[in-house]
Length: 189
Image (cartoon, rainbow, N blue to C red; front, side, top):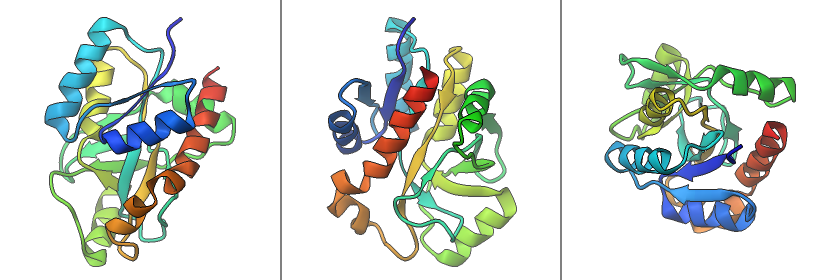
């Protein structure tokens, strides 16, 4: 049986996670849908992983989340009024049975949302707790490629932390995500 594949858009994240999890294959897909989707499709043509763990950083929509919180969404909306793509339900159930919590939804947006009021409104209207720029498309591609996919994310940007606090100490700030991914792999088995 093939092994899980850990993938994230940013090479700095992939490198740091690869150092923290040397027993796993960790790849960078490139930023944005235009890079991540073709990169993963090419990888799936070579060899399909037993599980795609599409991970990395995301921004807070639920204002109660803090920088370094790890979130495991059950699905992703592509824009507030767009389609919803569900992560692999049996994998999520297996993780929940082992005590890992899930969040109902996350959101993929084409533009950043900087103001707390706008973030709170998106959280209220969509139920999404975090957002990024690519995960909805990745979940869709994994599903159509028949690759189970989950998307644990670490909150890197809150309205209080700003954009640079997370990146200035990336290795340290990714530790909770690396520990979480280790638990996921242990459950996956």
